[in-house]
Image (cartoon, rainbow, N blue to C red; front, side):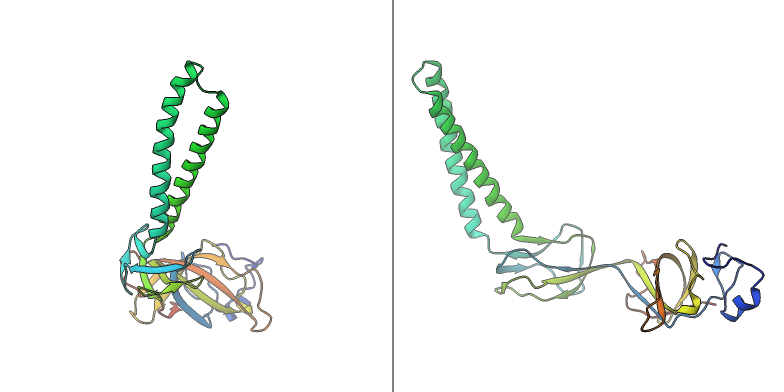
Length: 245
């Protein structure tokens, strides 16, 4: 297996001092990380770009939600009234347009008047679209399927820019492994590593997805990210882990 930064296989003794291994599909004797934590693959603090009164919170902590599911609903009565006004105006202008087309054929109305009607109709249709958009924005929906980890809003509250709730995806987990600088170059993206989950005592295979290209000067460490399939939800997010040497 290729190793980043290891140019000579002859320096086995030095590599053994670091606890490296060159055999097998998994890293069987790699350096032990200082910390290893399993975190959700995706975490989203759900908010809104508008302010308003909350009229409904459709989820609770621990609920599973599908992508697009309604989470929080705002008061949209003003937008709904604007939508009704726009639709009434559009209906009236449509009727006038139909009558005016016949008058135009008999030269009983000017083209300027027809043009003004068309402009008014276009503006009313834009108002209708805007009102509908405001109504749609009045329902906050889940951006992806996951679990509700936190709810920070209640019915009747006036909300602003602060997050309303948090959703996490745990069908896949990211292992955050922090190593001392001496282990830099031991792993590469796409490499498999074996991890032991402290809580369940189970061994899992993680795929390295990202490696810090720098060493943190304050701590003399770098971080490696590796992904774990957790489609059976057997491993709870937040579990600590260790390299299974």
